[in-house]
Amino acid sequence: MGRGIGIWVLATVLILAGALSAPAKEGGFLWDGNRWTQASMDGKIGYIWGLGNLADFEVSSGGPKAGAISQALVREMKNKTVSQVVQEVEEFYQKNPGGMKTSVIEVILQRYQKSMPPATRGEDKKP
Image (cartoon, rainbow, N blue to C red; front, side, top):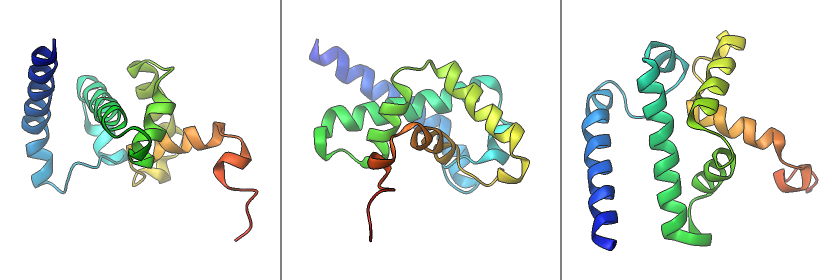
């Protein structure tokens, strides 16, 4: 069982590394609205799936010490399908043509932050 998971993780890493090597030459892995609108639907699904997979891996490996962004992505995406997340990102860029420089990760996390109670966001805390 452990060997099968290891092979799956290795295969996933190799696929993502190969798929993302070309965009790295064009300015990195961080997609914004400009790159998002140029991507095929398969590319968008793959990008969101990859983000979720990486966040899940980091949270499951690091537990409470996992990165805050990964924890937030896992919380935001755990009750949604990849297609729902893709649709929400699509809607953001359609409704906010001036927000094309906003990263896809920011779009997902902004939606998460809006659904959080104020005490969790830190809005009720004084500096």
